Length: 276
Length: 276
Image 1 (cartoon, chains in turn purple, green):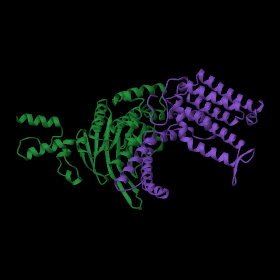
Image 2 (tube, rainbow over the protein chains, first blue to last red):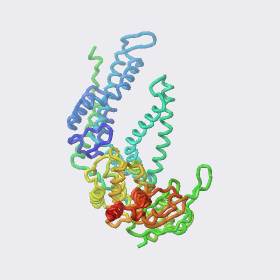
Image 3 (cartoon, each protein chain N blue to C red):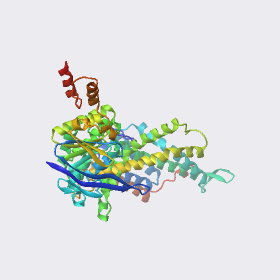
């Protein structure tokens, strides 16, 4: 796919880019599972090295990946501060009024932040190397077995594809409405938060009405193109697992296994004790 | 060969206030294979409703519509009718389902169960037919209105229909876009396609073999462009003469001995050259 409409796809020719999108989706899933199993510092180091190795394999500049952290920086700081203030156990470092800051608390909040960073880095790698359309195909492919319990996976896929397709159109429409309301003297940037929220109403209502109108026309267009009129539908794009896909999935599973083994069998090194 | 037949067709619906609206009243007509039929009429004359009756998007509340001898009211016929009667809508944005041109074109053929290799071959062929070969992997949302509408035509063409209905498909386009779509239509006509063209633009309607004028849901005129535009009742239906005919008529009224009901530029040029 040469042309991408939006999102953060980073076009490059790498082994990761060439993987089947289903593989990448599963790979990411296993990566997230691994993150939840980390306990020891060795585990953190392992996942970090693993993530960086994939970034290099995907030929994406580390700086680009770090940029994706920008979006969650507020969440990151927020959870860190909460964890520092509300972690009650352990050796007290500073205490004032009702708040205690403990060594364990600091350590805990630090590891939580690290976990979040690894999580965001890994998942954004998926969107860096996979176009939204390929992702839709992957979700459809992976959900296919659901048809045996009566869920129409193809309808789901068409819904996702249409949603993706209409994001830029509706963005454009929103901008037009904002301009139209501004031209009639509406102010969106002044006043307190309630005033600002109220000012959004004259944008949202026309946007909703026009979206419903679009949906109506689109439904007719789908009918006119024989959507769901026949059971014998075909598919132009067929996903096929290659050797590298099986290898990637093998590594992903192996990695989860290692992290789980680390949690269960390895003696947990007492970092705080060592520091003391 | 007759391919579409309407017998005493009427269509009624209730509006939001519960009033019965008669959008189409007692229309009987036939359309032959290879014809280029323009349907003219002012807003609310019922021309879009008539168009939707032809591919069973709407079913007549009175009378019978048959397409290739099949009654549109019979649900078993829907597939064959819609497969053979394609429709291009007014808003180019609201009839695309995918974010990438080739995926959008594949949608119709997939729905009617065309084999994968055949779909891929058809995509190439239809993109050539509408002059958009280099846009196969492009995103429609970045294109001009005329380009988007040509992709919409390509999407219909890929289903290999016998008839294509253009439901005011040029009304949202700039003159350049209109020209592009008209060029595509002329090319299709040469290949034997039957085209039904709904419009309120006289300058587009003159290109047709036959013009049907609708007013308040009834057919009030039906004939060749030369006869229609020579008819004195035209202003009654709020229709103006196309530019060429208007010039010819005014020249004639001004005293020049020429045929005042010509509709084509070449015919006017010929008449004027004769005078020199």
